[in-house]
Image (cartoon, rainbow, N blue to C red; front, side, top):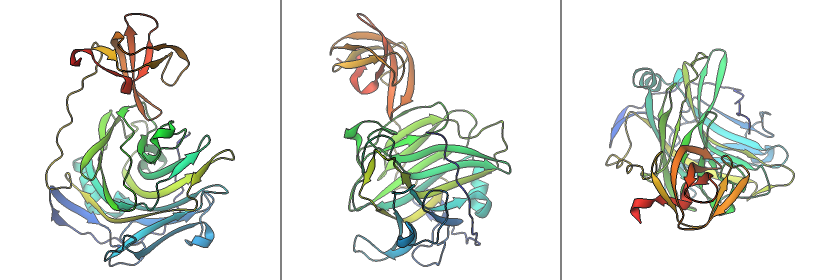
Length: 355
């Protein structure tokens, strides 16, 4: 899939800063979904149906963004994202942009990293059929006066073919980014019909760095990627809460139209939570490590490439390259002690010393 370029049909309002101390860090900005009017504290919002055709936000127009009572039946309000993905797809999104939020800009220009947390409510888990359906939940963009760098990374729901590629991954989240990366995924299945928290630690860097995602405070995804293109002028960071997707003639999403809800968006200078997240365990697989297959595994010429052979469970080998990311999975190139060598999904190998 080619990089998605967001068309900014921007209606900008002044954004009030909300500086407060939160557990784990200083909150630099929050939304005003509970008390404010459009665009509810965000830098801008937009509705499109089909994609790249801006419409007045309403269900009747195929894309909507509105504040409604809490869908879980509690007190307070929520931002409702609605899209009809038939006939060219839809986009419903709200953005926080450094050029409109001084505290956000100062954080990126001085520290080069940020933590963003938001609450999500999904009434029904999205499931897909056929080839090519996609559905974006969140995006970052690094942009400049004459350039729009690609999404690095985006957070997507897994479909049958992209970005995860396996039917068993329906209802899970995975990342997509425009540069060569290494990372793990997909996430566990997201909760349905209850509020849950997503958080991302995003770093603004021209060199590959870890970008980490948390679900209810627990790390579930990490991708290693560069987020800034040194060949272009990148002076602005954009973060999007979005419901943005489509499908092709031989595929579909269920349900459609599709709804999700957002509230309590926070931008912070540190991890948002009662305690910092535990550090990830040291890697058990790395170049040079001895590994053993834990189940029958297809060995491929390249990541997601043609199958060379199938190695049975219990075969030993040595890792010679990797990791690489593809189809929402981490891949390693293994020189097996017998039969063919090549790229395998990390799920089916383990460090031989652990057995």
